[in-house]
Image (cartoon, rainbow, N blue to C red; front, side, top):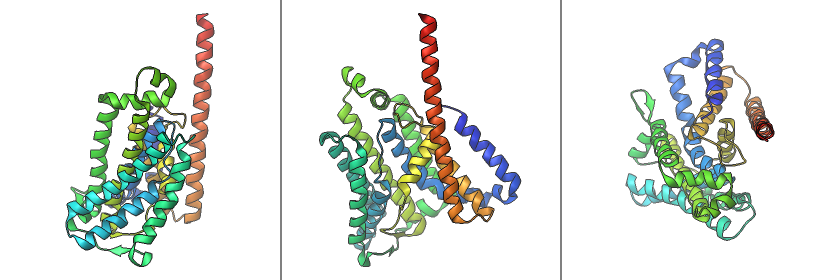
Length: 317
């Protein structure tokens, strides 16, 4: 894993703590972790999709739809397990639709289907929500997961840590995790090696959708409600987290830590600007500029690596 993004995060925290001493207060640090938990969790699923040269634009709307379905289930059954399972299955189902249509529909790029489901899921969420608005109330276990703390650490970020450990095992210790990198590096080469490319692609979109459903559990628990307007622009935040963290749109390159560091970077930047009293519109501009810089850094890195390979090849000859 490249230490560049982590070094940037450490420097940013040091600078912000000097400018605004309130930044390092335990309460504020807890707020940052709680606010970035949903982005971090959903970004881990987005990371797998981007590793395969794809993108999932539906995660925000998927999350909103999952909360609404969870809220409807809660109106019928006051059972935390039932509500959680409803959200997780709803998210995974949308991911499965994305994967099946992209892989077996032979679409040129997942941008098309995930853009479609972005609109479809948001429309379904608004249509299913009573009064097309927020539904108040969630089971106590879910509010504890999304809004509670353990030894001062938000439970939501502990959930992110659990998912992070599972993803680390998947990508580093399991064959199917290595297949994801192989497919992202070169789909044709992966196919020639006997790797089930279609199955790998499908699985990444299902996992991405599942993560959106898990993010729905955290957000519904934190707010104690379900809403069809949740997750607005979450797809952009998760893509930004992955790219800012150092992953590449060219696929086959990236580390789980990229998504987590990118998410925390976004959280720190927003929190620092809030503490400094910067207008929200300028905060949006600042995040946009960081994304541009991160993408340009990725382009420059790929160019330099290509040049290095050419020079090395010339030396060998």
